Image (cartoon, rainbow, N blue to C red; front, side, top):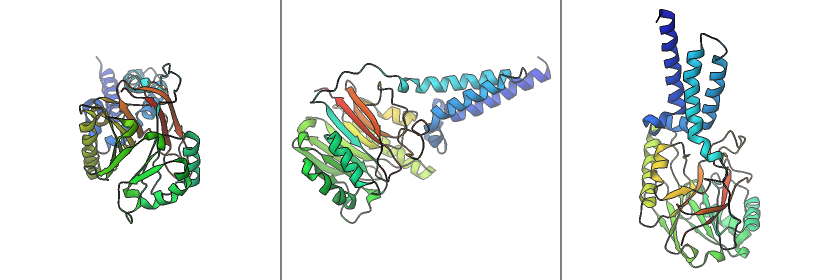
Length: 319
């Protein structure tokens, strides 16, 4: 092999390594460290960009080795996300299916009137609202109480909305019992009884992995989800996870749970940021359900005043 060929191979290896650090950091568990934890969330977009870069490199004979190497990384990245874009046959929704809506309301800034209209139209059994404390709950409830909803807040009155999670339950949810819990950076809610039967529903908001310290807290928060989902009775876990299925820590935490988005063809529709087109964002808001659950409906929905989109899922949970 001549010097030029050697240099081309070396350059191809460097480019492929650089592409892999962006597209496939979870393959070497680097995605649990900052900043890779943030980068891997955008794997679908980076994989498409890597594929486009490979196509450009393939135009020149001297850069074709690099094109092949970068293209292989891109294909691996696209392969890792492809299943989330596949829509499988779904059964028709039935009246006794469980319906759940989650919406991060951005420090209580979401439009309560528009949110109440959405709730009135869809009548979900449960509504999980991260970044909604007592103040936001008190503004929303007069608009939905006549629909038969009850509400609980994870934090005390006077605590900022951004620190809380609010849970609404419809009259159709039955005699639900709710308590506030600790273990995450932000308090969560745990519901049981009524339509949930022996299962628990956790309403949560994990830390955001935006720096090394908060990445460590995010991993601790996901460890609690791991504990729940690996328990003897798989729960329903709903809210803002600040994680996509491209995060290995999130996937490891699933245990006996799965995303309700799987099989709907909408697993790559972005819920954050709402200012970006749905294809350009990331899906960090989730409804996790026990494996064996059948999804009969799944939508990503908008409300003004918040930087998130919401998730509305209809599911048939095993008894």
